[in-house]
Image (cartoon, rainbow, N blue to C red; front, side, top):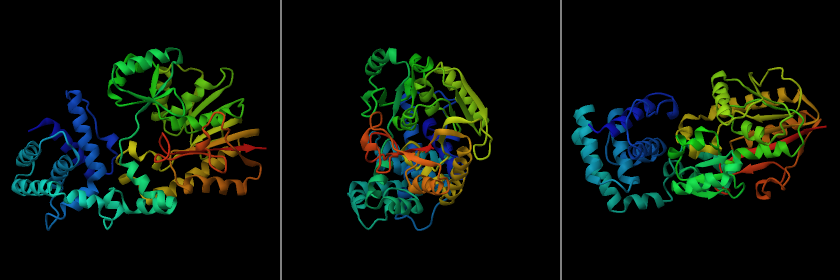
Amino acid sequence: MNNQRLHIYKTLKTWFSTNKYIDHIFTFEKTNFEQNEKRFISNIIFGVIQWHLQLEYILNKFYKRPPSLKTKILLFMGSYELLFLNNTKDYATVHSIVEMSKKLDKKSTSFINAILRKVIKFRENSSYEKFKNDENIPLNVKYSFPEWLVEKLQNDFKNDAESLLRIFNENPLQMIRIVNLQKRDEIILELKEMEIFKNENEYDNNFIEVTSFQPILKHSFFTNGWITIQDVSTSFPVKLLLQDNPKSVVDVCSAPGGKLFYLKQNLPEEIPLSAYDIDIFRLKKTQNNGKRLSLSNIDYKTADAQNFEFPKATHFLIDAPCSGLGVIRKKPDLRWRRKEKDITELISIQKNILYNISKYVKSNGAIIYSTCTIGDDENWDIINDFLKQNKDFKIKKANSETIPPELIDDNGAVKTLPHLHFCEGSFAVMLKKH
């Protein structure tokens, strides 16, 4: 049996059988796959997860009764390859899936063979192209999203909803940040020689878009802390905070540390910086990442930002727990694992954190509230509700000298949208205490 496809099948079977996120299941540990094999495996796993609603809609045309989960996963694997990948031969795909079925689900072998051949015909006679352009096909099927999330995007973004759905299905931006600026030219030259350099980001040329992370992870530039994996959208809350001349800073939801480390690098050494997080394991990982980047003098502590009594400081950074809808293209199963009720629960947490932190801000200090989501319910609605009940806080508008003006909304917050800007979706606003 093909070891690559068996690895794919086992991973997908676990994902479809549990509520686990794929990054808690999928691993190449204890395997000896080559890089090209790893790319193939990752492509099929993430592709099937992302597109399985559309695939199921199409496959349902070819049988009367839903097959078993085993059979369905094999059909998802085969049909994704046949409809989405151009670098595999149809006969090889069908043969491989049929051979797998003989070992895993022998009764379904002839059924799987027949269905996959129908999928090929569906593609070859242009039915698939017609399907993708058919305006009568529901958007959730066309873009393979849960119905509630499509409705939410339509409510929040009106005519832009379909553009968001479209870009959420595109390959995610793969971006690194140059940490060791003295080695900037050397790093960029090496990335070009490795043939993975794509471009410098439009908003900050120390954020570099690359075509692949895989060659970077074992490179000395990464292991020695000269570069780190980070999207430029994470820099804007930090730049917003730095605009306000902080004297002491507390990051209350600091894991995994992207904003924390960018802040540490740009904060004068004499200004104290503390990092808190509710998850001790994620905080420990954050601390280890800080060591890799050679960043010291950060005070790490565990705390629940909803109720912990923090030391007073001039500035607090809240990277609030959120639905993460701004980074869906980086997380293919987020659309399926996130539920509508989760957002209601997250809003309650966000409010609790913001209200709690407000008690520890010194006069003339500020809170930076940020998320990696894009709807008003987790952003402006939270802020407006807070301001109504806390008259000693006001919005201080972002300064366009360090943040691109096209990213600053009419109320002075920083807002990025993946279908409009060169980064992932995010939100950040400064609440100034008077």
